[in-house]
Amino acid sequence: MSADPVAQSLAIALQEWAVCCSALGDGRVILAVRKGGIHERGGGFFVPEHPRFLLLPTYLHQEPLRLQQAFVADHAAVKTDPAPGSHRLSLWAETAMVWKVTDLTLIQGLGPELLWSAAEVASRFAYRDEPWLYVVALRVMRLPQPVVIPDSPAYAGCRSWIPLATTVDLAGSTPVISTGRFEIRLDRINSVLNPGRPISRSMNSLRASRPT
Image 1 (tube, rainbow, N blue to C red):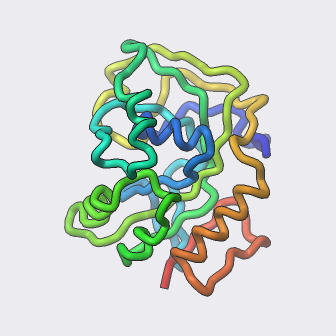
Image 2 (image 1 turned 120 degrees about the horizontal axis):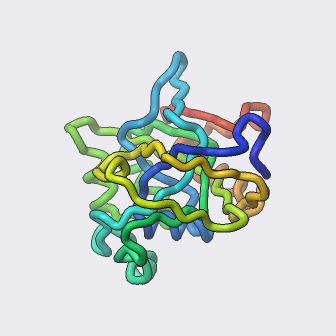
């Protein structure tokens, strides 16, 4: 899978824990969970503000106690920023599917497909006294070479979407896991979050679903 002609470069990034970016980059996980930054269209079709985006690692707030045990060792490798004053971008992602989940037990049933601990997922699920989460499947791509950009005060703060002053070329990007493996995992995740409703292969690459 490669970038299509309508998106050969990107200047928008999703800020995510460095440990999560690492796990997405090696294909150990393909999911993110979000409370906002996604819009609902008619018929329960959920669309992120930006369907394609760079992954911008952040080192704020990530703590080993907020991770599943399998990812605690990964945190030790990326717990601090190795180059303050700059950002190293090596990954970008395309949203493959979005589920709005109102049953916490369904999300917890994903097990090792999730990076976060059960307590962290429950906390995010209950945030703002609104019991739901968007679970987002990401098709992650690796740039042919990392791109290092200078930090900016405009990038600071606990925000999801970060407009970048630098445009990053996507040419030569490659998927971190094969299409076949990705589709198998997508089906498995969908069977947990949306049992009895298989994914239609005739749908566009951006899919969305409302669990029943």
